[in-house]
Length: 367
Image (tube, rainbow, N blue to C red; front, top):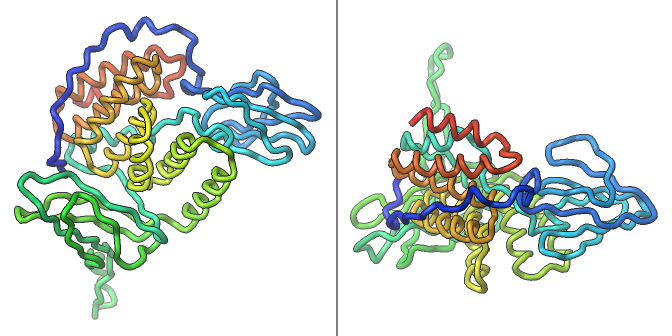
């Protein structure tokens, strides 16, 4: 799948990144929170991916994915990266995504095969859509096209009937168009029947010249939809600035592969104020994983520039990995290698690279 709307590659000079100050970054990411007060009780911390708890106290560093559990009468306060001081509810397990929504989070699922699949001309990602409130779809601009024919196709594998009980025919893929519309712009709000949880679909956009854009997607599962609703309700109960709340919601949606919702939600945030490197990176990753390679390139490049200015080493490194994936999607092996080498050097400066150095070395060896 190709994105016909490509921006020219930007040459970004890499000078001076090796002299970033040591110790400026937390072990599990750039932005970390910290417990600054514990009164009238104790506090336990559950680290990301762990099932057990560890004792926490004043000075304990907290990262995205961690959770905090104060005892029933404890008063615990956490300092967030944005400088705010947030109380933690006693007797309740609270995730750091709710306590400090500005915490740095990765936008890469650490899929070591996706870059290689992009190089092979495959599309390795799985965008999803809410079933109750489907998204606004968008697609790249087509040259000399003023009208787009949009269709959502349901994909189902059906077992064909057989008169021979000893013969089992392989399932057949049945494509059913469930919604069609005409658009004068490169964006349209879905107006078809309710999408089915876990069901597979495909978005197709046609012009007079033929098929212009296509991407597979899936209806979000009921369990993930319920989990997102609970997390969103918890987020809305916090008294957060509008920008922090919008970004936190975008992270929640991204983690559920709701990339169109992320794009839609970040647009007003980008327009309202100067976007940060993390916001550009989140938007870029969403465009990448919906096959919008031109816009992914643009926002990853912006994230690189802003992250370098802010000495945000982890976002800087991850954005270069994103740019390498865009180059892979566009089948430019030389550019992939150039960008991976830069990312490799940046990850080498981090205290903890979370396996990226090995992954990048593997990718470079396959080019």
